[in-house]
Image 1 (cartoon, rainbow, N blue to C red):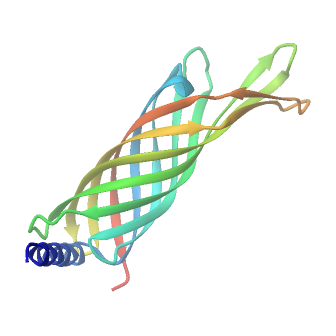
Image 2: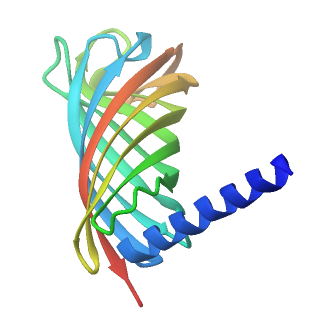
Image 3: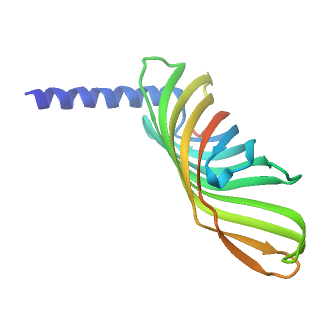
Length: 204
């Protein structure tokens, strides 16, 4: 009997969440956001916090939704005039928490990203004279949440924050003039991402 009651309660919760999601968004939406990224760890030693943006396409059949898109941020580096860039693609599942409102809804989210960290500088050394580029690619897992605020029948404000960890592979330094390459251990890092953007519903 207790199991049956529990199953009924879970079913009611899922149905109410689905109704709330249907009232605040279309099934297909596009979202554009500005992001602020704080970076930590040995992979980001000497790298400043940075700003950038992201865009994603999101499918929302119920309280659960999934988005796919791309992100980009630029970061100053201690002792260099050039900026470091972080660019990649991601998948982001999300679950809206029902609170009985048609105007706002908190959510929890995760994100799995493939990120490329790169920089290009002017060099004058025994290894390279001219442009010297460095890059490494890693997988990032983030978790966090946010708040959706309904601004119109097809427009939501989305504000959120996540914490994540990146495991980078081997990095490569390349001299553009000669093609010579060196590999180096690039380390790992963590991040805090704050995002504010607009989601625009498409279709019926």
